[in-house]
Each structure stands twice: as structure tokens, then as C-alpha cells.
Figure 1: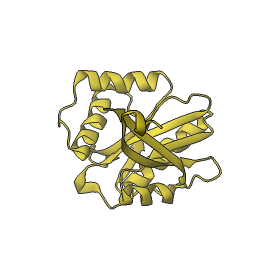
Figure 2 (figure 1 turned 45 degrees about the vertical axis):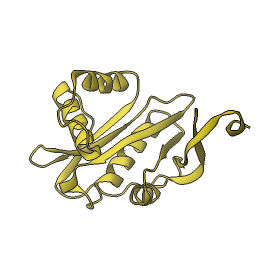
Figure 3 (figure 1 turned 135 degrees about the vertical axis):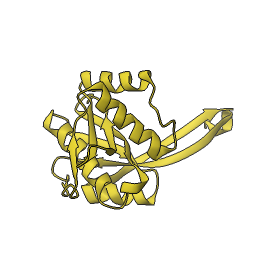
Length: 168
């Protein structure tokens, strides 16, 4: 009906859901640690790693860092993967739970650190922290087959589709 009235389907994405009893926690690869950014410098390092992984501006803006701080202050979760020498290799976050449901997003790993299991460890770390705060459902959208496999290894399962639609 919407298409007949002038709307255009932009995309249909499958979303995946994880529950506490489906979460699998893979080991964090050797040489890396997972932590929650607690300072502005750490938050900037996480945003920089995400920007780098997604092809964005290498230097995070003050607004980006403030947004991450607000997310954490409001009950959201952020996790960064840090090398033994202190480099932020990647990370991600989840919005504060609403009615015990939270979206996990921004899972990113810098190119030199990919294919070592970091994305799985980061996703599991965020999801585990969400469940520890009382969230009952975590969900996300996979951006491609590689990320789809990462999320399924952690215990996320397809649960439905989101429709992106716009008016012409």
C-alpha cells in the first residue's frame, strides 16, 4: 500500500537477536584486552578506531566523544579492544536498554587486527555486559556475510526483517 502511494523501499535488512541462554563467549585473542572506556582519551581512541574501520574521519570530533560519554552515562555499554601496547584495535557499543531490549551497534576492528576473533570477542563482551545490567534481549543488524558469521558465532540468530522506506 505504501509503495502504491509514492513510497520507495530503500532496503530490507535481517536483524539478529541474542538472549542470555544463547550467548556464547569466545576467548579474547592473545595480546588484546577488552575494557570499557572510562576517560575522554579512551573514548576518543574507541571512536577513532570505529571511524577508521568504517572509512570515516580519523580524528573523532568532540561531539562524537561526548555522544559516547552520554551513551555510557545513560546506561549504554561501550567496549574497546586494546593491544598490549595500548593501541585501540576496535570496539563497539549498545544503547541503553528500553524495556529490557538493547541494540548493539558499531562493531568495528581496524584493518591490521581483523580476522583474529576480535569482532566476536567485542560483540560478546558488549552483549554479556548488557545482560549483566538486566537486558533480556540484544539485537543488531549484520552489514554483510562476514559480520553475519561473527554474530552467529556469538549466539545471535535471525529473528525478522527491518524495512527502510522513504517517501519520494
